[in-house]
Image (cartoon, rainbow, N blue to C red; front, top):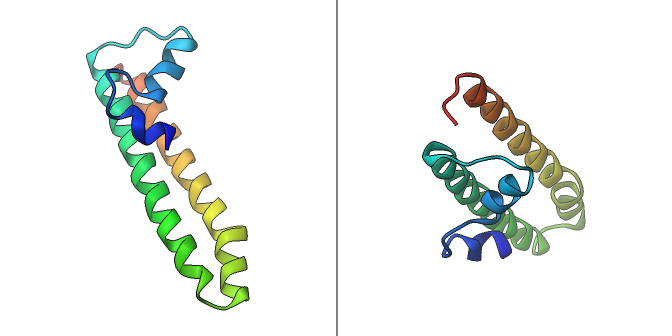
Length: 94
């Protein structure tokens, strides 16, 4: 919820975190961090819906998704976003 509500303010949480590390955020980096915030919020919302849906399924399916699959998906999204960030920084696009 904190990340989502930060979308309605001038500076998102991800932008604040980036600034805390001493990064100077130019216009492309500001756009990128706002997009990343949207992506994470969308992903977490879908994950929430699937998690709620699994409540009504068997215990085994609930356990597999909520205890394993959701964490793998979070890790994959993190690795993907981090890889894209590295590539964009090397190309000096952010």
